[in-house]
Amino acid sequence: MLPFIRSDLNQIRAYTPHPSGDDGKPVTAAITLDRLDTNESPFDLPVELKEKLAWTYQQLIESNRYPDGGHEALKQAIAEYVNESAGINPTAFTPANISVGNGSDELIRSLLIATCLGGEGSILVAHPTFSMYAILAQTLGIPVVQVQREANFEIDLAAAQLAIEQTQAPAIRVVFVVHPNSPTGNALTSSELEWLRNLPEEILVVIDEAYFEFSQTSVVRELLQQPNWVVLRTFSKAFRLAAHRVGYAIAHPHLIAALEKIRLPYNLPSFSAAAALVALQQRQLLLESVPQLLAERAKLIYALKQHPALQVWDSAANFIYLQLKATDFKAGAQDSLGNLTQQLKANGTLVRQISGGLRITVGSPEENLRTLNRLQAALNKRDEGREASKKPSL
Image (cartoon, rainbow, N blue to C red; front, side):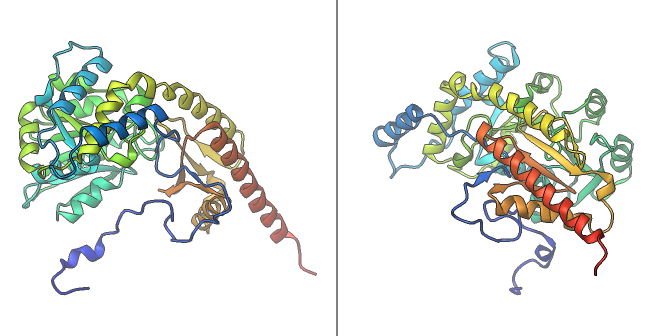
């Protein structure tokens, strides 16, 4: 390692994106590749919206000029959407309640800088969950306190409360939760929400609602009474703008003002801001895909639950989490899961192997059918190999 690089960076594992997967092995080019490992929408923007964006780029965006650094038009449109989707007063949230980031990752990093940097705090996460909370904290030298989840993936609230009470120097200042959680797909329960409501006001509660449009369950109304809460959302999932990297935070104006101090100038490219504006203007059209994906999710869960080797959980998001059943989790179980992942990949389906299971994005009907067939073939091959190993050699 170079002598001027922080020594603790050796201990941090970088986030691994698709399409190469964790091992870097390529996928055969001739195979239809189904990218079901990053929870994107399987549907691109409609052609007419791409044409509108092309016109916007040609006629309205000056490439030699910096973007709108204040994002005022976009913040106004987001605030209107937040109020509308929550069914509340059209002026309940205003641009003063909104901060826009280059993806939610930038906002997570800004929240960490605003709260914990310089030895002023630690963060609490419940494992398994979205890995970037811990990764970004570690890159900033912020301690990460982890508690486990129960068998149903609810947070171990007793352990979490004990961590809050006992963690010292620096004390826990931020709690991160996903609603619904990734990779497990479960929404926050009433007991989890009540615990969050009762946390002291000096602890910031970050509730990541990246999958809100699929769960239709939100805590955004509670922000009006909870100044120590912030909700994160993204345009990368239901709005089909993963390539544009636009996320936003909804919070008390004082917290938003702090984030604006930290935000890099001109952090959102003009074209990304334009795409988010168009998406909000055409949200009825874009969100028409959500009911179809929910129907596909139900079909996938039902089909996967029929297989005796799989433990499949219900999901409130646009993905499904499954594990090999307990009888498979003995010696070599992780290898078995890895082999299953690699066989799916070799046949053209990318899934995310994480926390002892597989997270599979709900794709198009065609992708989902291929996934079911490929998974069944891989499991059959595994079972045949087991039977062959049982036969005595001659």
